[in-house]
Amino acid sequence: MSSKQVADRDKSARAVVAAITQHRDAVEAALTATLSPYLERGERMPDVGLLLTLIGRRLSALAGDLTTADRAHERELADDPAPRQRRDEAVAAVRRIVVALRGTVESNHGDAGLQALGLWDPPPADPSRLRLYGEALVESLLGDDVVLPAPESDAIAFDRAKLARRLRAPLDALADALADVTREEKEADTTQLTKNAAMNAHDHAFPRLAGLLAALARAVGLDDLAARMRPSGRRAGVLAEPDEPAPAPEPSAD
Image (cartoon, rainbow, N blue to C red):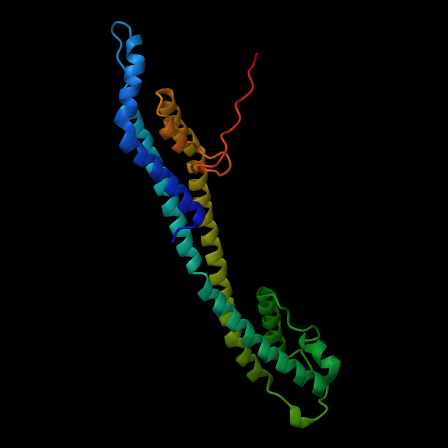
C-alpha cells in the first residue's frame, strides 16, 4: 500500500492527465482561435495538442516512478520485523544465562569472582554491546588463566565449559540477527533514498507542468479548468484544494 503522501501525489497527477485527455482538443482549438489571426506568411500554429500529450506522459512517468519506489520501500520495511524479533529473542536468551551466572558467581565467589570473569558490570541493554559482553564472558569461562577465588560452598560449583557452550548458541544467534538487522537497515536506507529522489523529481516537475496546463487554459478563457489544475502553494506535488487561496500576485517592477 502506498503512503498517503505518495497516494496524494499520484491522485493529483492522474487528475491532470485526465484533464489533458478530456480538454486537450478544447484548449488547442481555443488557443488556435485566439492566436491564429496573428500568424504571418509561412508560419503555422504549434502543435499544442502534442505539447499537452507530452506533459501528460511526463507526469504519468514521474508519478509511476514515485509509486514504484514507494512500494519497494514499503516492501523492504515489511521485511524488518522478523530479524528484529530474532535479535530480541537472542538478547533475552543471553541475558537469562548471564543474569543467572552473575548470581551464582556473586553468591559463591563474591566480588572478586565477578571481576575475574568480567561480570562486575551488569549485562548492557544495547544488543551489540551485549554480544561483545557475552563473547568476552565466553573467553573468560574457557580461559585457563582466569582463576576464580575459592568457592564459599562446593555445593554451588558450576561447570565453566558447559556454561560457555550454553552461552555460545544464543550468542551466535544474536550475531546472525544483528547482521540481518544491519543489512535490512541498509537496504531500507537505499530504498528510502530512491523514494526521496523520485519524490523530489515529481515535486520539482509537477507544479511547472500542471501550472503550464493551468496557464494555457486561463489564457484561452477556460477559467474553471485553470482553477482545477492550479498547483498547491501549501503542499508539494499536488493540486490546490478548492478553498486554497490563490497566491498573491508579485509586486510590479514599476
